[in-house]
Length: 239
Image (tube, rainbow, N blue to C red; front, side, top):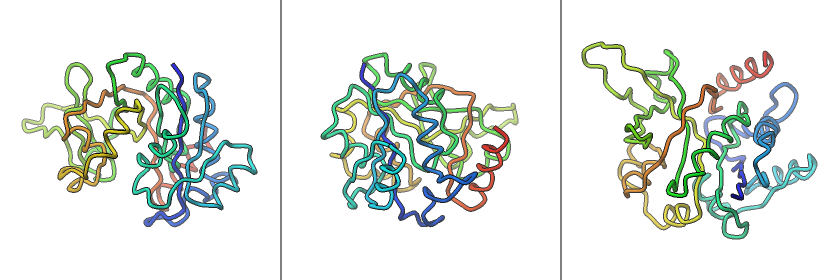
């Protein structure tokens, strides 16, 4: 099974400008992402996908494989799809450029999921830390007994009506796709749930495409704000 990882990276972030090139421990955030992903030895390649000449130049300076993609891509998934049109693989793994705590265990968990040829889309969950349970920036996921996602939400799901001590799971934004799933995704319009939650993975669920979810013990801090950046730097410094 040929697996490649694609790291969508753009400079046009709104909440934290130019975040993928901001320094963490003296090196750009993107360098931490690339290093963590590249450490997964089962990958055939790791590709930075960007619409920025600056990020392309940074990649080449560091010896990273990178491709310039269209500025019209509306999401990381569309950028992965664009690369998939010219780079053949059995499985494409999507790791966002704002995940500096990415590590090989995340990639290996996704690859293990995709060894089942029936799985078209895979992703990850981890036990949700108490501060994240009610935080809308931490996306929660509930799954069925076979490990397929029932729903993703920024709300606190499931609702613990009787205070029984429900266990909550945080969704981590790492994905694995087969080519057919990517082709199907970009051909579909934005779904109503996707628009409501601003979670693009709901487009798969609303159109009957199962998402299989593997559990990992390694939480991450996706960097969207200055506070996220500081927390990620503190963690990486300790590690």
